[in-house]
Image 1 (spheres, protein in one colour):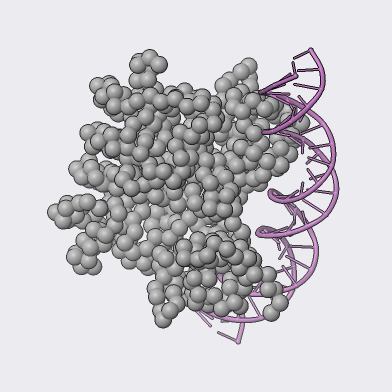
Image 2: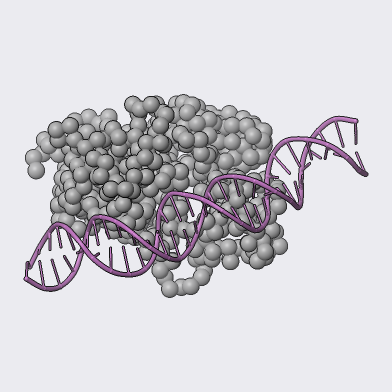
Length: 252
Length: 252
DNA sequence: CGAGTTGTTGAAATGACTCAATGTTAGTGG
DNA sequence: CCACTAACATTGAGTCATTTCAACAACTCG
């Protein structure tokens, strides 16, 4: 991969905001490029938190296995996004695994190298802090959603998140080019693969989406947003009514 | 309040680890002591994140109101614990409110003062990062619990957390001296006041606890821990122990 | 083509919530 | 000190969203 391209990705990431081009070059030189194929683990839960990385190609999922064997899909990381900030700290282990859902490449730094860099470029520590604050707010929000929203809304929310993060526009629609199983989506939304299947069927029947095995096409993102309950444009009346009306029609 | 006592609290907090006594004095002088009575808001959701603080007396609860009016009780802060790290960053608003559940005092720093301090003592930024990483792991864990555990387990978990954080030993038992309503506990555990009441009744009937309006007495913390599913002493099959060790930072 | 994985859908089971009625406690002022 | 009131707690019965289980359909890949 060309150096300028990597530099560009670096400069665009939140962790490296406010650094001079020189600093960015230095940082780039301190990292190494690694590659994984589909299904590989970029990092594994329980291992020493030794690496920080910036994804330059592909998409991976962050998953956590609970003591009782449940899997939770926390989020996805794609091109341009970083993971493993925890490696800057001593004596931590990864609280989750990251698995490639398609072939991936990432720039990788050793944890102590990252710590050194933060020493040399103190703004990086603040950047990291900002990232963690935002991430925690997101986690908090997911918690709230799990608490207050129904399965249908949470699935819609998941679709919106995927669309915003990884979706590609395609004549008026949004295409999510990931081979996600119903089980993946269940783990992502905190429900079962059966419920996901039911909800997606309803969405499909109503023409909101077109879900296939290797991609999801969102036909009416606005309506999906509305069901998700995070409709920024929308009237704040009827959101619930609309949400309900989408799942009620059981009759085919 | 005596200066030495404040310095001691400062030194004991994670945010100020690794600072020289001189530095601690400087920092102490930069803060001001404020007081609140029961029910007061130390900070309010939606306001500019302008203050960082260290609680020196009393206990307060972090609550979040969702767009649809639900309240979520995130955690408690007590003596020696800090809140408002977000104030070190520009252009953030508080994502939650903090309300005193008993008379409180706290050392308060302006956000920009905190940012300056981080500039002068770079280790503070790393400390803050560590705190946020741990906090995010906790939030993540709560999410998991909400997903996989039943109400009974979550309430037990809440009791364990309260006991660990704020409990005082009292002949073989643990006393939690807080006037928590069933509704508070419901918001804390992600359920209704009715379910909390039922669960506590069962616990009480089985002699695990003794819950009154102004305090909770935990008679058999081990059994409560076991119900919570985070019993470290329990079965050494390792599965649970391993799970726990994945989330908690490694022993030093 | 066949085997294994993934997806769909109905029916039954269930944990938790809602609602309503009733009991209890703390705090107030007479 | 008592009566009164408001806040808080308990408990049962009914309801509901979601899960579980099972059977079957569709797709993928060697």
